[in-house]
Length: 266
Image (spheres, helix red, strand yellow):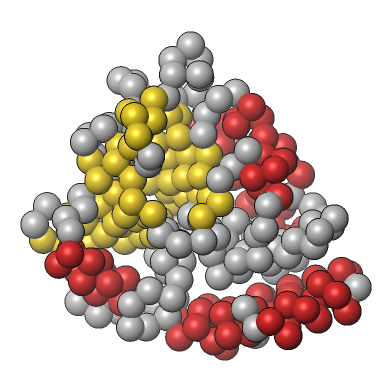
């Protein structure tokens, strides 16, 4: 229940959007980069946006890399980001659902969001239907023929020995320092060098969407990860939307029950 109006999930991943309500999408905040102090103005701007959209939000989708590096130990989570986490808790406590998709910088999420914030966390793309409009939603990392930066990073961060060292051997302070270095400083692992527009025909996420359309029609494919606001017509009344980021563009998408639109937050 939100503002006296229920958001109805008629069946799994099918959400009925009431008249006057909207669904919001955002991604790639990279809070903490390059330093916590440097990212604080961006965090405050994002929290202000959350505070505005909560008034007519039927749901909020965050498509990954909210943090530049996130590591959960059994009893320890990263210091900071209290404004963002507090605002998300306030929103979910009010009855507005928030959905989170892990990105390549926060793929070690393992229960904190679900237990403390009541936010479901997805590690793979999911299909949703809002009213009668179909969506394919995910962070976008590792999909398609490109994304070499993420594929290099995944080999490191999903390696069982590397994870064991982080959680069992290294003190969290030291482990977080290493993770922050890999996320911010090492461009080969972070994939920042891949964030260049390749042209509509060569964008690897667009190529991925076109392959998925051969199996099943979706009205919208919505991803983050590329740090570029993109609206690419895939043909056959299907579009690929990339959400951009909250570093340069401060962009997001909003679905009003009928159509999806990219916007930027001033």
